[in-house]
Image (tube, rainbow, N blue to C red):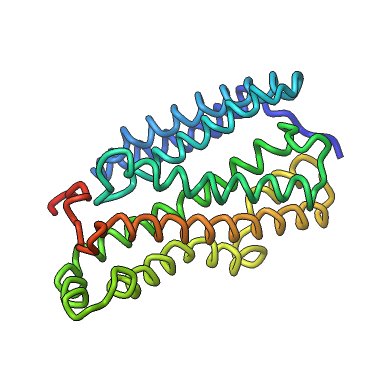
Length: 268
């Protein structure tokens, strides 16, 4: 099976669907037409630029350039995690918790998959490293953002209960234990739902792309399973790290609840 290339005209026809969506938003007074158009324009520019960068990387396989691109992806993902928090941590902690958690989980699991499972030589080949890392960062980012937002929101709402437990002799971990569990459950829900419905309700993106590119369906299914297992592990490890660091940051060295370390949320 040969790959069918898409022309600019083909993409323009598909872009009409976005214009239709913006038109419906304007007609129904939803107020999101501007955001839809900006998001479509951003994705177009970003993906074209990424395609050009990856084309150059595939030709050179320079470890330094690959490392710079990977760190840029991580930095943007860390910023997105911080931006999605209604009550984020003040100062560098607001950015550092998410970025550190994703670095510990996504990078380690990607390297493990490339060296032990796929066994690419060299393991940093951009054809494998960048797509795998990108999918892992994108999905881990969502889980960590949800988990952190749940942690800080529930800790703020349950301030009286947490302080009462501290007054009764509980340490910081015991005082916030149930909130940490709920935050971790929230962070894991998206990937659990995705795994539960894959192949029945939805055909995952990587498998669809490989099939369209001409790969055998069974080979595409195996790679999709690999990706989903990696995402599940990365989301779990990243959420655990982020929630532990974040919950510890909510208390000082004297085990007092310090909600002043959070930036007040909208209306909060």
